[in-house]
Picture 1: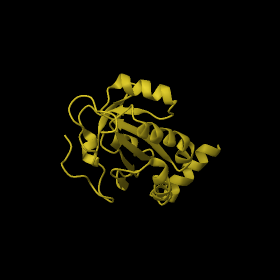
Picture 2: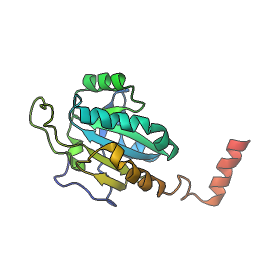
Picture 3: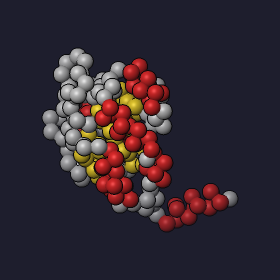
Length: 180
């Protein structure tokens, strides 16, 4: 279960293992090894605010991909509702069903038991995690994804390349394999 206080930038990002709208189990520690992660934690799948933020992430998906980052949306909403939302908004990234409350570890406030009345859902949280599972950005109660994107991109552009820690000999061998 999630710890009671949210981590800060520079801390190890709390791990999670959640079912995605692609019907696979995704674990943060396995995903961030391949690429940096942009995580959007939310409650209400019906609210305009969340829909606008998810659409903003979809619009910036290619830019984030070019920055070697992958987007994941995380919500306590049921998986069928998340699948419908992904389909309706044509989202190019998966949404994860947070059935065990991992989002609380990132500072997303718990919603009241049962349905979340529109307009009363806790504000979403936006986070970015590097390839070593270290938080490089954490924005609890983010105003909007559009407003936060310059900061997200700056945090991602400041990350070293995936091959930065590899010995030169290994990098040269990889390049040789790609070329030949």
